[in-house]
Image (cartoon, rainbow, N blue to C red; front, side, top):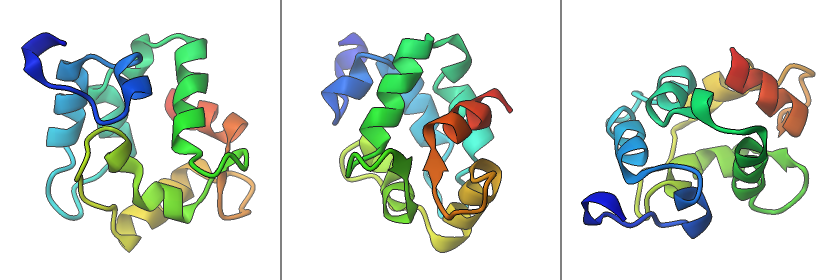
Length: 118
């Protein structure tokens, strides 16, 4: 892979370049620094195909429930880099507020697509 960096999750490396993943991770290094819009822009989500985005949702949905729930959001960054920090409660709350349009406390695939477009 470019730059000698390897993605923790092989499936993510099929979607994002090492440079995109590094840029996203750099934008969220510090506590309280995660912003989904900034992160998504840094990893280049706007240039990904619908199939790649569906694959990404499947990766983030760790328990395969069809939803990205609080515990999965907490570990969001770890899908991009092994050993990455957990999102904190404030970051998770803001992520959910942006993505959970029906108020059920989780992000479904349709909500995820909308979140990526905003």
